[in-house]
Amino acid sequence: MGDDVTAHPARRPVLFVNPTAGGGRAVHAGVPERAQERGIEVIVLNPDHSLATLVRQAVAEGADVLGVAGGDGSLAVVATAAHANGLPFVCIPAGTRNHFALDLGVDRHDPIGALDAFTDGIERRIDVAQINGRLFLNNVSLGLYGEAVRRSAYRDAKLRTLLETAGAALGPSRAVPELHLVDDLGREHDHPAVVLVSNNPYALDPSRAPGTRPTLDSGRLGIVVLDSPHHASRPAGRAWTATSFEVTAPGPVHAGIDGEAVELHPPLDFAIQPGVLRVRIPASHAGRRDVRDLRPFREGRTP
Image (cartoon, rainbow, N blue to C red; front, top):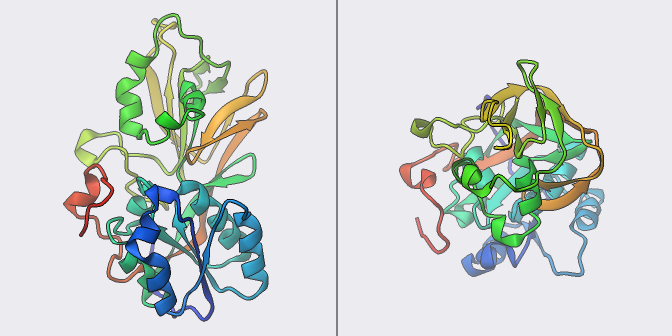
């Protein structure tokens, strides 16, 4: 990724902890206690809390580094505030899959070590993507997968799994949402079965750890479109990159934004914002990806 610089220790760091994310991984690992030992203010969420409100309050009270130990939805909320206020963002891997942590270069098997980003970290700038002005760190899924994300059983699906199983899942009688888009070759796609737009492109080559993003600072959206099998005369799909992208539809669209089920109103305008998010990573991790980082993640695995 881009140039790394040594970060000064945070003066007033704040860490938000989602105690239910990843089956309670942060709590089981002792993240709140270890964070407090490092002088980090810890705010443990409960169902009555509005994370966005708590983050705004922390910023108003002088927080100079914002971190979160939680799932992708929590990450996006805190990253949005960090971006809006020009503050560094720290990701503590405490979700179920921790895909963003992996792509960022944080050791997702070491949530305690990740806390060192507040005190002994390096800082870099990465891209963020937006859909209709809403920030996302990983991806937005539309089409049948956007519908499927509304069902919790599908929320852990990875890109590779989606691409490998889409053909089997899309029976010839299965209706697909009405979406329309034009790809980089000027070819129109009506009623695509799957549209996946990511903050930087995923690797699709099996030799390059598919389902991961080699970089988060390319300044490009990754776009994958799988057409419905109803259109057998067309190519199965296409993948390309762009700095902006639009999807139209005749009515509201079900989507998954970083795994969160939402309803969006078209047109859906995607854009990339290069290098606008300051992120801090522990110097001991520093973008390291060892072999186990590229294997399926299992809760309870220790370094």
